[in-house]
Image (cartoon, rainbow, N blue to C red):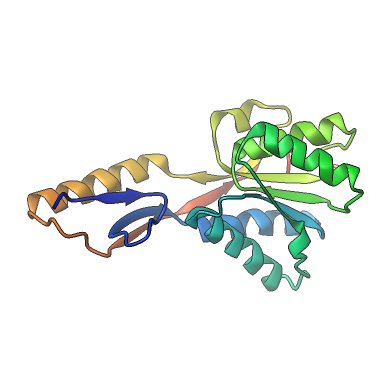
Length: 193
C-alpha cells in the first residue's frame, strides 16, 4: 500500500514507470553509424537483456530496416556491462576475424572498453571502425577520442520521478497506476562516429 514509481527498467507487474526513450536511442545510435558509412555494425549488448536493452536492440533493428541494411544476428555480442568484459568481447571478435566497421554499445563503459580494444589491436577509430555509446557519462567526453553517444536527460528523469511520486502521495493513491512517462534522448556527436 505504498506508492511506487519505477525508474529506467520495467519490472514484471510494474505500475508507474519513468523511462528514457531507449528504442529511439538505439535507432539514433545505429542510424549515426549507418550515415557515417558503416555496413557491418556490431551491437555490444547486456547479456541480462533488461527492458532497456531490449528497447535499444529494437532501435538497432529498426535502423537496419529503415536503411535496408541486412541484419546479422551474429553481430549482437552479449556480455557483461563493464569495461573489461567489453574489451575482452571485442578482442575476441577481432581474433575470430569477424568483419565489422561500427559498434553500437549498450552503454558508455562498454564503449570505452571497445575503444581500448580497438586501439590495442591497431584499429584506428573512427577511420577503420566507428563507435556510438549510450548514457553520455563524463568519461565519454574526456577520453581519446571522445565518444559519440546517446544522451539521457537525467535532470528530467529526476524531476519527473519526484513529481509523479509526490502526486501519488498527495492524492493518496496506494495502487500503482499504469502510467508510462518517456523521457526523450538525443545523439551527442563527438569524434568516434
